[in-house]
Image 1 (cartoon, one colour):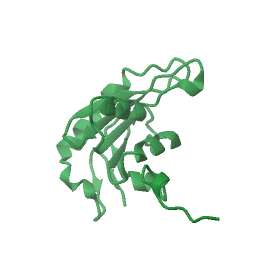
Image 2 (cartoon, rainbow, N blue to C red):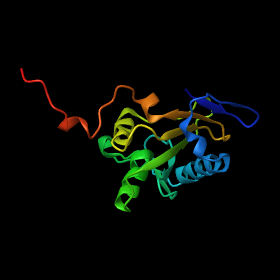
Image 3 (cartoon, helix red, strand yellow):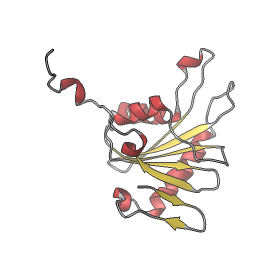
Image 4 (cartoon, one colour):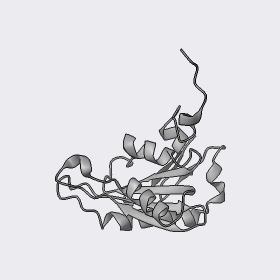
Length: 160
């Protein structure tokens, strides 16, 4: 299930595992993701994206997109924040907020970011936001159902 939160209303589903995240923490993550997008290097697309990742030990690590003239070498905000977190010793995450300048729809991670995020579990929360502070809440499982992760290469295989 999901949650949509606007400045004037909130609709919540009964099965949210993010109840341990306070409204203040969610707001902080979303605000920091919008701050992070200001650092984006996007001379080609002009599409700024920022992210704020909450680690298991309650640190917030931000990231932004970094483009490259060789388009395939660009780096998304979500992967940027995760790589920074891992390089600083964190591999367990509670949530990530993602921000862009889009006002007509919520930003959503690309397929590559979804798989990259999946490497670190499926039960953490993803907050897809708009510049006005409204957001849509999902789990990684919602965004990447029937996924495979680090445990899969080691599962027994049926011989043919």
